[in-house]
Length: 56
View 1 (cartoon, rainbow, N blue to C red):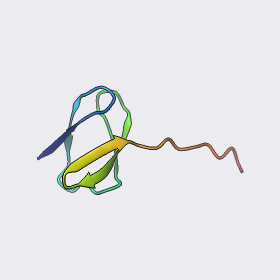
View 2 (view 1 turned 180 degrees about the vertical axis):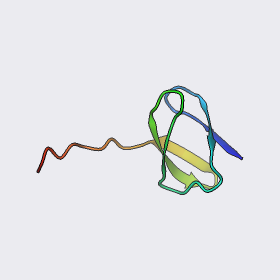
View 3 (view 1 turned 90 degrees about the vertical axis):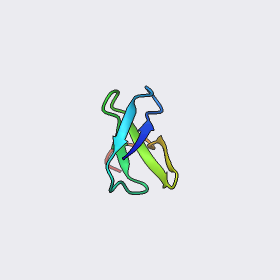
View 4 (view 1 turned 120 degrees about the horizontal axis):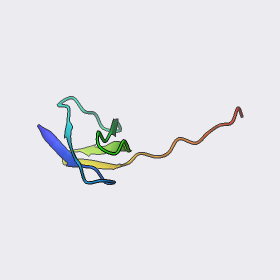
């Protein structure tokens, strides 16, 4: 079982065994989106914010 700590609130997040690189996970405590950057070792980063396209 792999765990990481949230970069926003430091909560421990238990990752599923089938987590994939570039997958977006959500912190169950603060709700921030995190991106799995690397699997060995498991590294996370804040997920990039999606920009609004405003119908363009």
